[in-house]
Image (cartoon, one colour):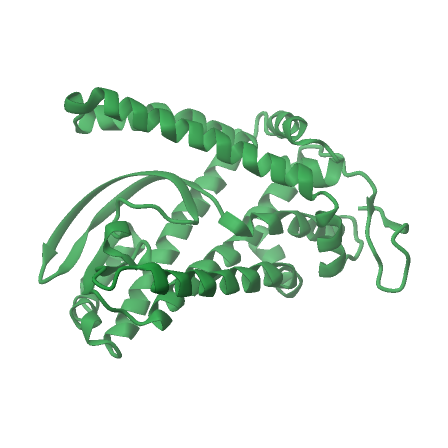
Length: 337
């Protein structure tokens, strides 16, 4: 049902997404140009199927990603001829980064369809901006909670120090993962509660938890599947980019030779591949990998928005009358969603 709705309303959903995508791509270009100016000339670059192209100290399966927050990973890798292969197992929490703001106009589009009403992308965005402060407060509170969890985790690691081994690591990872996962899923309807019920941030978190009573496992299953799917789509996409670049850039040649083997299939189920590129890389290649990352998360965000909004409505969420600006009418007119 989710994918059917996505297919039937693909154009409208992407008209909502497009401003965010274009702005984020523009910001990406500016950041890349800034990195070129500020990064040391002898900085070593790397390419892998987790991050695309990045500086070597930020590359590899242990580092972060703008689209995935608070990730803890256990990896086993083998290296030959400067090409790194292995398996990467992740416990991570999916975040759509700067694209999060599009959740609310996407929610309005889904609710409008459920109420047999019509709403344009412009109207959805205008109404969202009128709710921007409670939305920002909710987003910052979530980031704060994650930051506190990460700081506590790092502090505990430093205290344990010499006693840290794989068993201890897995126990700590589980201890910190369970509460974070619980609250990330329990609060996943807060956007709908803010935009449709006009609730402040804290009240929206409480309301979301109430609505998900008895449905938490279902929400978690979709959440986990979407997170895993995002990882696999990114890995396979970057693997294909590695193959393409191997035909145009000599430094990718060894990776291309490896990827044409059966090892490419491991990217679909948790495989990892990377290569050290040296101290120079084309900015167009960096932008290509970052643009692909943006588009992948932009493609997945409507799926999460559709699922959470439909779940919100099924659980008895109450949508207030929402004022929207019709093209030919005044702002005071309303569409009952």
